[in-house]
Amino acid sequence: MNLDNVPWCEKYRASCFADVKGQELAVDKVKSFLRQFPRKKAVVLHGGPGVGKTSLAYAIAAELDAEILELNASDLRDRDKINEIVKPASEQQSLFRRSKVILVDEIDGISSRDRGGLQALLKIIDDSSFPVIVTANDIWDKKFAKLRQKCDLVQLRDVDYKTILEILKDICLKEGCKVKEDVLTSISIKARGDLRAAINDLQLAGKHEEFEQIGDRNKETSIFSALEYVFKNAKIDVEMLRVFDSVNMPIDEIFLWIEENIPLEYKGEELAKAFDALSLADVFRGRIYRHQHWRFMVYEYFLLGSGVASSKKYNRTGWTNYKKPTRILKIWLQNQRAIRKKTICQKYARYCHISVKQAMKDWLLIRFLLKGKEIRERLKLTEEEAEFLDRKV
Image (cartoon, rainbow, N blue to C red; front, side, top):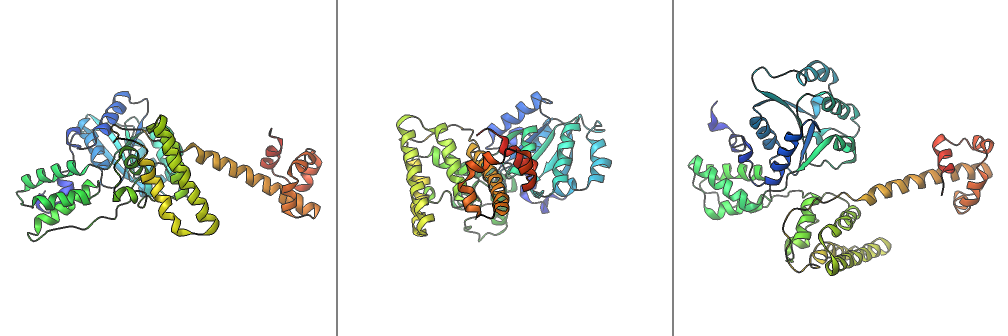
């Protein structure tokens, strides 16, 4: 193969665990998964674009001297292909290597309506005699709930710019290209943790001697990276003021993530100050909703980022396993209960020729009146609605 025309991000892809830079914790977790296989048959490598998920998957294969059977989201939609090719391949030994791994790359490509694709993947995991590696940008989507239960989850974090800088310098040395130190530093910082993007920019810089600077990348930030930045840093800077701007998540959900994870980082007085900042942010959120004063949003974001961060006296170190908010599930359950109550009141109001609003006010009385089977049949209540009425309050 002529390597002159190969993109450098492919040419210098990691070929073993030692080549995976800046992801030492993730590598340790992968090693633990492999040692304990088949306690769980699959591992999900998740994180932002360009952090090395696919590279780590290929490093796993190299370390195991394994053949890779690679699939993507479109392959999973073809059930015939799964049954004819993937299923036998996932059960038979490799002819040329010691082992085999199945790589399902970019699982995010499966739509929430594509139930067959996810079911096919779960079936592969159950039947496979070999490790299954899944990569995803966001594994916390609710459509992946069953997948998360079957897999070990390994998060790859944005690569630190200093690590990126060292990798770029090493590539320059191997390629014999001369790029100014300040340009390499600029590329490393403005890649914002995306190693693949940084290597692509370096290749462009290496081909153009006049190359000086590169613009900022509009990179989406994961909620985990944003939380880490707020919870670990005590210094208030411009980045802290806009830390949640690039998180693709409703502000109400960001509130829940912060509320859930503050106790994991802060104790005592710092914990009280952090929750005080969060409560003040909630005050401004209420004013925005009630009076449509959108200019208050700047205070809301300031308190969520800088306000919470300033509650600590010094920078934090180490890694924290941030948790998904449990209140999201509680809110969903409450919404389901509200839906059941409303549909019952609508049927009762229609039957009794009263308003739904009045029926909702008389809910306790209605619940008592609807104990009989005959009245439930007249209102044509569903099994779910009848079960809801029979639950203990």
